[in-house]
Length: 599
Image (cartoon, rainbow, N blue to C red; front, side):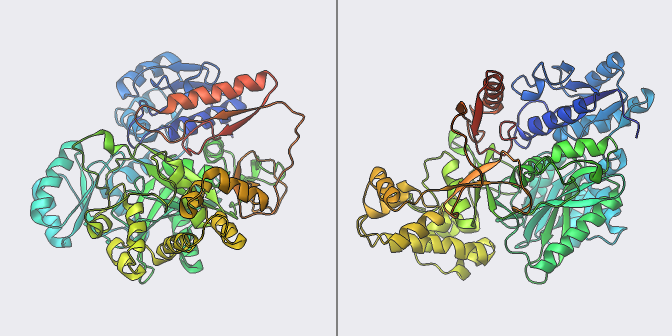
């Protein structure tokens, strides 16, 4: 294994919808991995708010746009031996591909670390993508890549309406849409072709589940499925707009392992080394599948998977791109086992997007195949219900949980469920309060009934609690409520009490949360992890606390929103580092999976 002496790392540039703090996190991890190997790192990233541009991390930082013509000048000056473009999102990939197309990588004898350029181009070019996977008998949606309006209309007639539009080399689903007729297609395709010179017209897989796998592969062909995630919303809603649950909750054992093997076959077919995200559509009626997308780079889902499992995906991926094999790398959580393992989870994580649509008076609140969310939160619990209610509170939009949000109503509830907006979750709660059946709601939303039964159970538990005053509330009902993620505020609303009185009752009952670890191995081995969460579904803490040590708690800023972004994470991380130098142990409280502070 011959390691380069100097590596050029491309960042993602400005924060935007589809490219946010997750690339600050992954890029920082990559720099850490490279510096551990004593490799000089030259970073290109003009975003001054990011942690990775701190003066003590990379050897040199160029605050310049991640554009091929400017990067060429940096290459001429720095003369790096290798390029890393998998840690800067779509911006870095597009720049790297352009450098290769212009012959600049060959001219300067620069090696691309990680996925080969051909694999990256295949995953970004929708026509090549379908051809490459079809040649290996891997199923993709029936479709055709087009570059003109006439070609698109002809393709749609062959496929049959409704159809799905996907733009090549696009970020956050930009240019994608669902078209039900020729008039809609003409309008949407014209807009898509103005943003990209290639658009894929494909069958619309209405009602199919969307499943994601995070896969890593080394040069020795060891493949691991680090995390699989299930989108609560069906196909047609961008994964960045959807509630995402990890691990998946509704797949059968056969479906899980079948998709896992297909994911391995896909990365081998493409020759990807490092990390990649694979998105599947799964037919709930017969387990048929389609490979929707392959991201041959670190992504938003990669950051979520890393935080959900405790597996340092970006760090390990960077090492694999240098030529290490998985058995050669240590599991940093146990310190004794290798990195060649698939994490086991004894908890559930729920991610919910954060929208700021109310700040724009005329914008459509409808969510679909294009991203509109500006941030996200991740909650951890021992049940789906617990994690869901925690995540809703974390959004910082004034909601107490799935239920208990007073004065919330919809003019047309059926339309809200059939054509979802950013308020869909609360529409689901309202439907069950009105007595709608799971079958009716599932028919409108195409959400798996398993999730809907869990949500309906929360509504039924609320109704049961409302029958009691706080003094009369049975102990077992109070315990059940806390295990299902109900806050003291919710219980106060239901029992016509106050938060303080609920807390007092809870303390008298000795109802206190336990501190649990995210240890990657479901407590099979001793762990040294600093990833912690609180739950009422436990009888004891996973670790003991030395109260003689000086500690300071640092409060994070939560989900990204307009006016509160990665700059506050930079503040939190540097505050934590400064306190550590002063001899304090720091406790970081944050629930944004995209951040460096939650590393």
